[in-house]
Image (cartoon, rainbow, N blue to C red; front, side):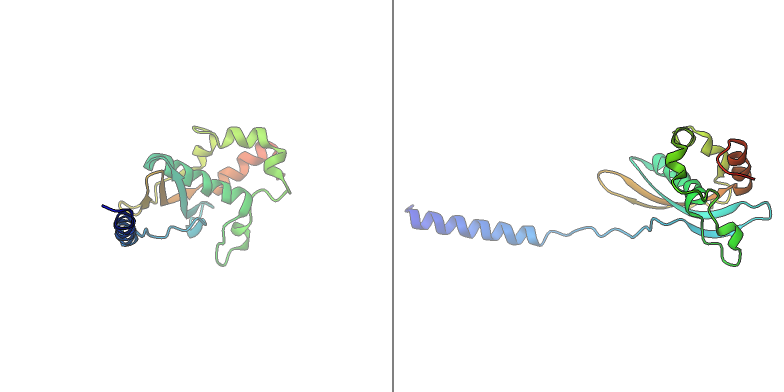
Length: 162
């Protein structure tokens, strides 16, 4: 085969493989938002929330969702329609997470105290929404944050004033 024919066949081969690669189907995943969303509140001051987490597996993602829900109640607040008091974050001081970093690092550690203030009792079977790729799992789930108990815990530990 002469050089011209070799180059022509090489270009044809590369062109065909490029078009095959261009037609490869890409899996489109569902969209899971990352904002914690209010669902319900109870008379005891607890909040039922839709929280979101990422992890290397399902259990890690659920733990992260619980941490995110508690963190949002403490630092960001969650929009509770018709109840501005429950919507406010528990900690309103600027840079409180950095100022009390030793406390919050321990509080949010795996197996930390945050677990005392979040339950899955409002979760219905099949209510978890999961998205998985080669690296991690994204999950949204329903949790209940015991806001009143959390507030008293933060007061007892000197994080917020009564």
